[in-house]
Length: 386
Image (cartoon, rainbow, N blue to C red; front, side):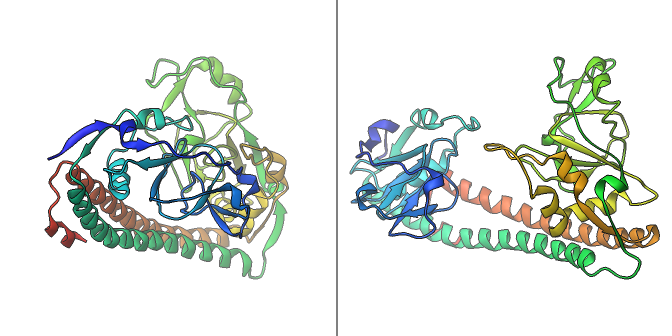
């Protein structure tokens, strides 16, 4: 018979040990550090007195990141936001771990999430039934997780292959190539507004202009969903110096998407925030698409990101972009190279999209099985799905 109890009634208090700040993590050491980052082990430590001794497996919950880990070995706590969850004796730890996975909570950004987690009610079957459910999920997830790892590897291989093409193009230059600074081959290298608009709407209104930030920029394409609009007063203070036109390069210079780059896909005037840099090339000297591909290449990307500023948020600075050096041939040769790289990019993106769809399906399958498990609908023949 299944019963339900509150989340906090299902866990025991655990001893407190010192938290090691991330900047102090060692690359090698006697004891593994478990933090709230994605990787299972995040660093190492040598002081025995800081070790959390595991007598029964525990669940680690990242209060900020919502990362969930099943830990069955002694470890050292890393940084802030690490919640050690020790289930009571009536609850199998792996069962509890799968329960948390089955109940993803709403993301609050980098705020703390445990306050949402502890609101959950935990369904608790007899211990033997818990162990049966865990055994089935362990077996099925082993196959699914391997398929996920292989799919993620395929995606990375596709990206690496395209990067190698870029690298070959710009390192194995032929006759007639010259080198110039970005500043010499561009009409303008400028970022957007350094203050947010007072008027901002999710609906287009009379006299409004599209407001583009780093959230709208991805490498090789723009995100044109959930767009925002600002008024003419704000737009007119920005557009004269940062007049992005169709086909110009847009580069994210700070924020979570730093280094993403694409061509402007919009045929209308847009307002840019300072997180986005406009690069407008002299088209009779260097094509925008050619320079975009160079920035994506290992050497180009290294040049513009090599001297980023900022502590918590890294920023690409305009003078670094302007001082970067680009190798390029005459215009007709650039057009040939662009055509070749465009063709390779289309095939690469198709391969990545197919694998991303497969990855989504695999993750949805895991979530579906977890839902069945905690609804009491998991049967032994489900081990065949993997």
